[in-house]
Image (tube, rainbow, N blue to C red):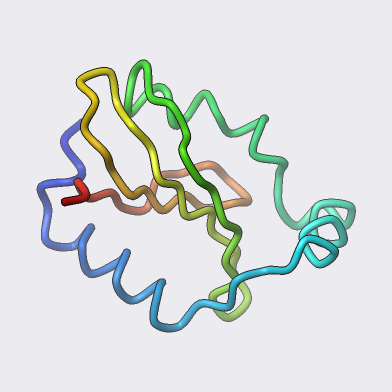
Length: 100
C-alpha cells in the first residue's frame, strides 16, 4: 500500500496540521474513557499492515472538529521516515507521506 505517494495524502496531513488541536494528556484519558477513541495499542495492527516492521518514533492525538486522529512519525523496515494520519476511532489510515 503506497499511500505516501498520493497528493491527497499530503493534503490530508497538511490540513490536519492546520486545523487540528493537539490534545493534552488529561484530555486524552477522558476521551479514551468515554469510548470515543481507542487506545493506540488496539490500532497498532492497522499500522503494521500498511507499514510492516514500522517503529513509532512519536505519536500525538489531534482533535479536528469532532474527530480525533493520531499523527504518527514512524520509521519503516528500510529506515525511511513517514508521517501517518490515523483515525483514532476506527484505526483507518487517512494518509501518509514520506518525511524528508
